[in-house]
Image 1 (cartoon, rainbow, N blue to C red):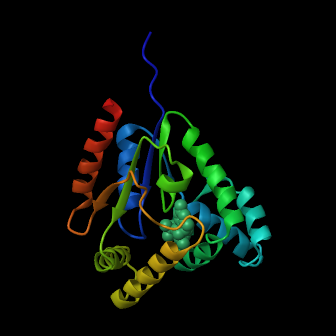
Image 2: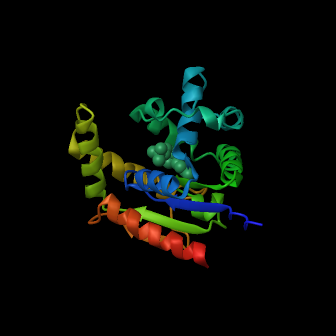
Length: 215
Ligand code: DC
């Protein structure tokens, strides 16, 4: 009899534009796991409210919308718009919305053969028993520069100073939130990508995952 493959959950947290999305996709691809960018679940909830002309400040209405969310229909290209990110950060402070989305995220994490989830509270709240946890960070200046270059690379227009101001504002909102604030889990591996390319970060993470799998 072949031994059963273990169910693997990899938690990746960190502030906006630190490189956690790219790292998570690379890890999911390498280990044959599903990947969920949990930020998209907050963004999709906000977009559903906007599309239906519903208020962004009514917790019960937002929670009902979050409960009805279909995780299979999350479209990054539509949801990545700046205004949707702003609206998402408003619904992300609501405990009832968080409870509904965390339930859906946990169900996703339980699917076989496992999953990589990235967000702000994966290691601390959503999957505290994950096989391995990473906290990906970089200085605000480097994150702003990366976001700026990405927008320019896609043919858009961007102003570095306003991107930096925006990143600092979002950091404060994510960190100061009462429910599930952004912080590294006690047992998370810190990956500071300020001076490290994403490929180097991926190699470091891969070695740590391989070691965790051997235990
Ligand atoms: O990472 P992002 O920009 O797509 O996140 C959108 C918003 O959702 C942002 O305000 C942070 C919030 N978020 C959260 O509170 N918890 C998560 N696990 C993921 C995102």
